[in-house]
Image 1 (cartoon, helix red, strand yellow):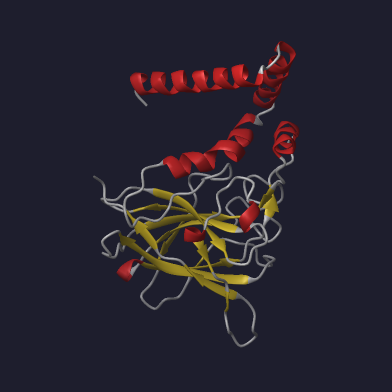
Image 2: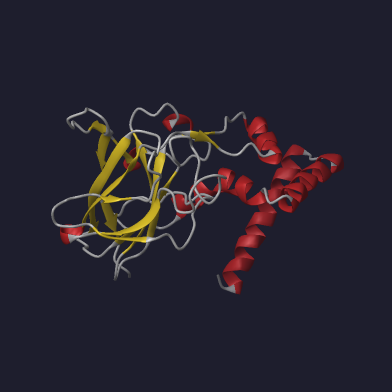
Length: 261
């Protein structure tokens, strides 16, 4: 961000806060309590969580979206760079498995679809960096006891931009119950729930990168997502897999990336 743009944003931010103080007649002790909350949140490492919960979905919504491109969505605090390269989706349609424990809990899921440009051109070679919570709502690298790259990996789209990934159905979960964030959510009358979702970061030559999430129809928290990220355009349906043992699900979601301008 250049200095001129940064200065304009900070000026508007300060003026907006000053306007709130004037309109509500914020008293000095109230101001000091607010500063103390932010100070404690920063000192304990909670400030990033608080900002992500309250503001990140607005940042994603404000991003310029090319006509026909898939909506961006929040990255969240659980992304980790350097996930293993799991290879290319093959022409036979066999799904590429995410790394997981031999006894990984949860319902098996095959997540498939295609990556295309906004004009419909397939994008073979597009890379999908996928990560998700497990069936207990926990993320590897952030929860103790999970293998380092559990349910994380980079998959390259094959012919026609198609991909298929074998994983498990993630669970909804509550955001971490950090005290300052909980205080603010209480003031706003919000509960800490997030609907189940898959995270995907996509890259393809000549196209703008995209970070988004895929949600599932019927999730009880779709209408009450604490971060305001869930939306119909990013929602798909879990279908019974129909295998011989009747176990597992499939879902499909196609992504459209905008060409670099």
